Length: 280
Image (cartoon, rainbow, N blue to C red; front, top):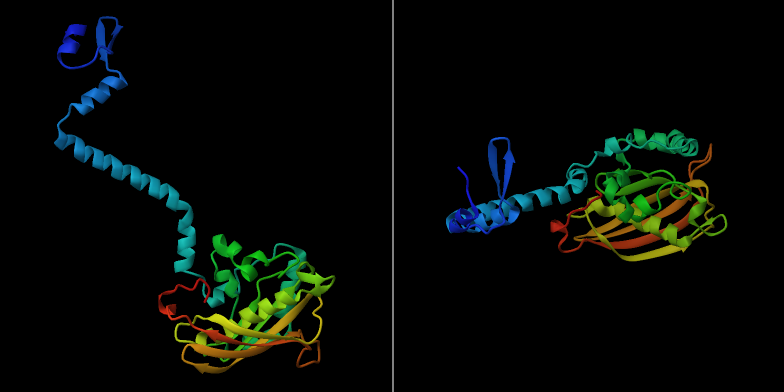
């Protein structure tokens, strides 16, 4: 049956439709404008659920597209590697980094700490999701290359009483040529002293309230330095810690040369129970 312009007008469509004829077959084509008018003529109880369904679908698709890149980061936060796993997931990218890695793990101090049952060994910076490391100074911004060349290795007692860490400091960390910047050394002490006492606090988290640094000797770049710390007192949410940076002991030496000494007071925030620590 043929539908003419008058019939279109009678049933409520504007005169924007067209016919397509192929042989003896005639097809009625409805333009997008016609479809819009047709949809508008549907009853309200049909249009409302349809609009709601389309809105929900659009929102779900948009949220899924936006959230997809964050899924690996969320998974890494909820399920970080174990302390033991952090010791094996790092692979040196160059021969030079491989040599530094070998120097740290083959040294008698490291081997003795690995065999000491009082200490838990780990590389805590590797628990930070890779996508978030650029927001961490020692675990991202200053990690690699000729800076803190490889992820520091730490040894910590479960009760927060003692702490030891080893880190290589490169020439890009200097204040004066060949001498590591004093501010960087203060940062290392601040972080190490804090990590030492965290397990001794109720929620394993604290911020620095005070920090005192005594520089004993210039710290030459291009060497592994050892951080040693001990928690001297804990009172509720407060912890007092002292420590030092030393040179890596040479063969036949029991202790290295003391380079920097420091002591600090750390206080656990009142809202610490509701805070999520990325690095533990």
